[in-house]
Length: 167
Image (cartoon, rainbow, N blue to C red):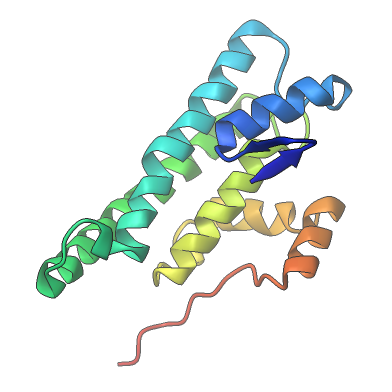
């Protein structure tokens, strides 16, 4: 949630657009037409596909009251989420092939920090971040960006919460 004066903004796409409008000099969203379109396309995919898949893992009770069905929903969503993290790693690989060190373009930005969040959530769901090594290395790099490091420290966030299942 972002509070700007009397305005409360709750959706990540709207927050990113709002911040970009407030701070155009920060170039939070690329200015070039196709790069801007690709940024919004990726942000929307993260928000409308990856994020809701995690909701099925974390809150299966929203989809059924049957506990057996909840476990099936959660297990299926974990498999889907793992595939989406692979897809996110592919987007990172594509960005690197195009000469960008960041998903967001020339510098660490909203796509990168959202990628950190999504990979971290995967670790909460029992997905080893090392299963996507390029993405895991990228997320570790994002966590070292001073503003991100400060936010993680302030919120007392661990980068990975993965714990191998007991055998």
